[in-house]
Amino acid sequence: MSTFHLQIVTPDGGFYDGEAEKLIVRTINGNVCILPRHAPYVTALGTGEACTVIDGQRRRAACAGGMLAVTKENVRLVATTFEWAEDIDANRAQRAKERAEAALQRATEKAEIDRAQAKLKRALTRLSVTR
Amino acid sequence: MAASSMKDIKLRIKSVSSTMQITKAMELVASSKLRRAKARAEATRPYFTTLHATLTDIAYGNTDFSSPFVQRREVKKSCYIMVAGDRGMAGGYNANLFKAVTAHMGEKSVCVLPIGKKAVEYCRHHGLELVTDAYAVAEDVSLGDCFSIARMLCEQFRKGSFDELYVGYTNFVSMLTQQPAVLKMLPIRYERAEAKNTAESLTLYEPSTESVYDAIVPEYVGGLLWGAMAESVASEQGARRTAMDAASKNAGEMIEDLSLKYNRARQGAITQEITEIVAGAEA
Image 1: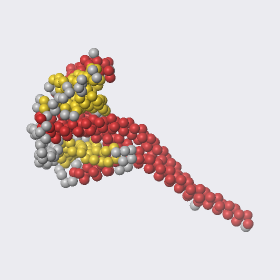
Image 2: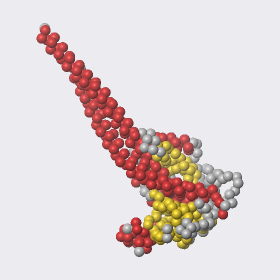
Image 3: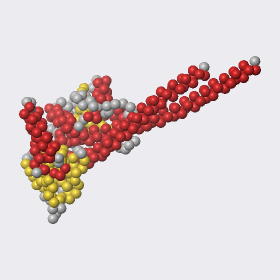
């Protein structure tokens, strides 16, 4: 199967640098799937599940914020957070979800509500990826 | 006279050796902090370079200037983010950065967002206009803080509070060398070659160039700032370690010198006493 060069980086360090067959990520406009020989393409990432197919192996991850840039040479996923499913602590995500829900209840200002909602979304994504 | 000078020297040795203890301890603390800071700076570097390379690629191929972040506009005011340390005792770390940033500012009308206690003090002292001094402790600034700073600055940039954004930080070249640098963040603009590269300009932006830039640019500024912070923190510890190492060495030399003087004075006192006794016996 043909492959493309995929680079995944986050502020905590590089995550992946190598060949991949398929990449599915949530952008601000919904899910997109990148296959080899994709046209040059740039978009911003939302919060959601990401999925890569490397050597026929499907790997799931939680991904939030950042950008996706497809050029002729490679595909760069520059994410704010990116965690493989096996690295996620489900209990911690569950607690984060509860905290975010409580914060959402209390929040009155728009900025607070936005922040709590973003946190809740991240926690829910993490939980759904681990399942 | 000999007795009092001996006492003076002894006191001096004591005070120098207690200073040396402090500098030694600071050096050890800086070394262990440096190891962590260096690991962080190295972990961030791929993100930093990829982010920069990606944005450069995008901006280079860009032909749509609907987003305010890529438009060229007349520069009336510049904003500088100044990343310095919280404490002194780090050799020229803070002073070098201030010199570099001040030289870059020149005569422009500027506002500054200082990060680190020393940067806040410097700006207050020189009467520079502050955007905010909420980030006074450089060591406590988290990734989340970097992104909130970035969002706030991008918002102000859009509103036209300033027309250029720079970050002044210190590059961690090696354990012994740290280089202050000023990096331009906004507007994102690269001088393009005359010949238009048509393949590049076919890049798809979804949903639209403007909304992509609006979402990406704050991330970009935040990411660059995080990278700059990581470099600066590592540099600060590196500079402190070097400075404290030199201070401990100097203290060691001083103690050696003083011990020699002390022994001479002691010898002198003994000789004098013997002379006095002998003279007394002869009399």
